[in-house]
Structure formats: C-alpha cells, structure tokens
Image (cartoon, rainbow, N blue to C red; front, side):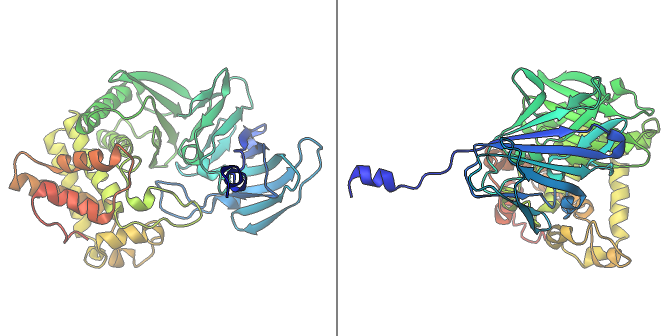
Length: 449
C-alpha cells in the first residue's frame, strides 16, 4: 500500500461542532428556565442528548430529567421541525440526516432551593450545570458557550466561568465537566470582591438576614490562608463563593473554582451557629484540593448516566470534615477549647450509633448512593455516616502519626497525596491511598475499612 493510499484510507474524526446554549427566564415567577441549544457543524445522522442523573459532589441519583418539559428540535435554516424520540429516562435522540445546524428547545422547572438543584423566582435565578444542560455523548470534551438572558436589565450574573471576549453575558466552558462544575447565580445579589494571596475572590449573596458581610469576608480570608498554607498555595486564578440565605436550608457543594452555600438567614449572630457556618465554608473550600483535584480513581472520569462507586468517600468527605474544624483553629477563629468541644460532640454522636459496628467505612462510602441520603427507621442500626466516622478515623490517624513521629502528621499525608496525584489531577486507587498513609505513619494501615 502506498503512502498516499494509506492516507486516503485512514478514518477521520468529524469536525468538532460548535455548541451554544442560551438560558432565558422571561417569566421568573413561573419557575421555568427556557433553554435553547444551538449546534453548528453537525455531521451525524442522529443527535443524542443526555441529561445527567447526578451531580459530582452529591452522591445520589437525582433524576434531573424529570424537570424537563416541552422538548422540541428544528432546522434553524429552514425552520422545519426535526423528528425526535425519547430512548430512556434521560436520553433524547433527534434525526439530523442531511442537517448541519440544529436547534433544540426545552424548559426546565426550577423550584427547589438547594445547592444541588435549580431555583428560579421573581428575585433570582440559580442553576447547576448538571441539572440544566444536556451533554452530547462523544463530544464531552468540546467547548461550550452559555449565553444568559436575564429578565431585567439590572440582573447580574455570578459564575466562575470566564466571559466570551467582548460579551459580558456569554460564558465559556472548556468542556462539559467544567460546565457541570460551574453553577450560576443571576439576579440583584450582593456582590463583594476581596483579595487573598494576590488572587481575586468574590462573594455573591442572595437573600436578606443578619449576616455581616465584612466580618464573613475577614474570617473567610483567614480560612483561605490557613488552607493554602497546608497545601502550599492556591491552585486557581479566581474563586467564587455563592451564598443563599434561606428560611431553614442548610448545605454546601464544592466546585473546582467555586462553591455553593445555603444557610438560614438568621443564623449568623449566635456564636455556635456562626461557627457552624464557618465550618461549612472551610469544608467546601477544602474540597477544592481534596475531591476536586485530589480524588479517587473512580471519580477521575465522571459517568453522568449512573452511580460512580468508590470506597474512598470516607477520606474525601470524612477527612475534609476533620479539617474543616481544624482549619478554624489554625486560622485563629476557634479557640482550642472550642475545637475540643466540637470533637467531643462528634465522638458522642458516633458512640450513640449502633450502625458503627455493622457497616465498615469502605462499605459506607460505596453504598452512599442507596443509604446515606435515604434514611429509614433502621438506618442508625445498620449504617454509619462516612462523614462522621471518617472524621474521627482521620483524627485517630493524625494522633497515631504524631505519637510515632512528632515531626509528622496527617498534614504530611495530604501533602504527599497532593504532590503525587492532586497536582496532576491523577486519580488514586484505594491501595495507593493506604500506601501514602502508611508511608507517613511508618506502619501498616490496612485495618482501615
């Protein structure tokens, strides 16, 4: 075979399509986002679209597709409708033979104010990428533009994504993972900018309450500095804190360059409640290292269609829970007495759960998808939270390492893992995690389970 013949016969990959989303909310009180997907340069006879069933960081299948309505597709050049059908609960297919441009329209009902879902009303719009956008199987690595069309000119947009040059309402994600990992807040939220270690940070606050933003910013700066000192710097160019002040909600969700927080609007003046909120801040921020960049092999590549099982959530979440309180101590926000009191409460909680004798940590991690967030009357008897038990196992590991070698601690385990896996964003296996702990501890830790 000649070189020319070989070149002609070599299969070629289709040209990457241009993917552009438009998110409008013309009647925000209806709780409905109107989403338009426009593709240019499409070359296949069919277009497959899939809605994620979960969002990274929250290990439960949430069936986001159940909120989709009024799905349609057409040829934007001729205006003719394109045939479409639904192949599975989260899978739509559009017939595109002979068509190079495709427009898909659908609506998403958004009336659930949590850090994992979407919420739209007359005061603001908030959404998570995994809960609003389709991904195109085979084109997950293609860049995606997102145009936001606010209902009122005074509504602004807060997100960690960069804007398209010359267009402050259009944002660009380098791939679908980035889009799924970049929540949006749209409205008249309070906006505060501040610097830490010469890097820009932003705080966007929706809602009213008894929060003192300047006090929060000062404490947040201390937390950032303490955590950056542990890992040797900040691995991002810009970071965004999104805070929703709600009636009684509580929660946080980590993202690579941002986090979403939900907290009761009047929970900031009571010292104990304010400390709990700062622990939430420290926890989600710590995740930008432990989970978002330093993560188990099973979470290195996300499968948005189904559960992503790992036995290491106890380290992802439990160790982070240990450090969220420890960081407040190191930041000078919490006194040693308060730190020990917090640990005492958690030890008492664990001791009161019979399930700690039944479910190993590895199993608690693996079964998060069916147990932790689906409690029933027997839960305390049959299972244990990998957050709680993982936190206290991390405490015991830290104490054991310090006892054997006063010059070492669990900090050194994290730094070792960060150097080996986190900086290059290479997923670690469970044996590699145990090996790193054993290397610093100077003893076998295979009994951790």
